[in-house]
Length: 389
Length: 242
Image 1 (cartoon, rainbow over the protein chains, first blue to last red):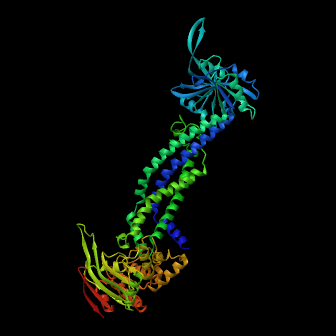
Image 2: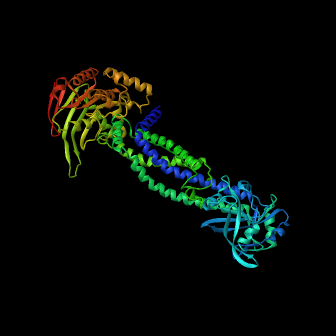
């Protein structure tokens, strides 16, 4: 009953000291909201990447070129198809290009490889001389379906039997719509033949994706090594590991920066929780004068802090949810999605997990405890006469 | 050895002695440039059930002595004994327990918590005692009714007059049924009518065998006191027994 009484008294204090409570809650939300948003976006991007990886080929093969990935002859796809367990071999041409000053990813694929995300196209799949571009790129270049675009390539054309070097124009057959993945925002999709020509690597692809029957991954890898020891083989598991490692590193860097920001916030909270400290000190003196023990005063402040944390953490979560889902995470998304811009043109992926929320509650509690317990203890251990001065 | 000493001290206590202080000094900022000697070598004894007044002009050390006797502060030197036990060496916890069980203090400026209603202020000491809200309210209401404040129970201190605030503070001091009631300058912040009410309250408390210790420079309470200690510049200047 005693602890319940102190809990109720603490709740009463949170309500009665409105200004102080509001200031502390606002400070905590300001600290927790970016943390929850960032972690949610990081998890969302991670999940989408995992889906992309699982949708893609089981093995990617390139040539080893002095320890780097080198191009591979397209005709090798037909040879690889003969390896037992391989169901499909798809050459791809992929690389980075600048279009209108914006970095884009150009992907050339065969008709065989159609990821499910390609369903999200306003328009149609590209044929020869056509391209499908990402929404972000289309907005940047102010392009619509049916318009033409030069992606920096030139061709030799004969006009009245005279050779001319002219800009090669591509017809925009489609634009990835808002539902497509984040990777589609700055993507240029075209046929593999066109892509090969853009990259000027006739008869070569950047890699060949192999789809294999379940359980054949190791055997196919072995067969590939036997076929050509200069093949660089990346299994789906390996790609997944790279991606996880990349995200974990990004998450780690963010966490380190956040801890730094967190450390800088503690003095701010110390100042804000000292809001009305003289009145607070007097109240503690009065409580001590009327027979409260120091540990009872500390218990009450601890309960107050729990309540403030219990209000702050869900408030930060709601704000983070609204910021991402309703406003599409402006200013936070670019930290985790390169090229997203301060206001991302595609729906920012997010995934709200329970663990970061639990962490945020404990963050909040730690902050308020740091800000208040010491000053309370100081006020409680001096004589009531001094505390009430 | 300690036990023997304590026992001999306790056996040496007179039956009617409640509080005794021996050679008490209180020096603020001791050893610093702004050192203030508030009390110097004060020794006195307060009997159980008595009405004692500490009299003296402003700055004579009345409030400081009351704070020491009410365990609100610690002396710089000397000993304060309660029922024969030297409380100057008591821990913070032991002093809080003593305040909770045995002492009710009414401060000169009342020290009510501004955001709490009258009954909540009165019942504050009962919170850590584990008394339910209903129990706290009932006990507070009994006292407020006795003091003529039942209809003001849900009012905040700022909505009460000085006399009413003082009665709320008295009710808070009485809520744990302490043996000693200490009032610091009780007539300084109230009008004549409220002073009459206060005198009646003090008379009733005395008839309930409470030990009353009051500091004042006002002569209005003097006729009702059993003992008056005169303080001058922090020193005991005289004692008058009724």
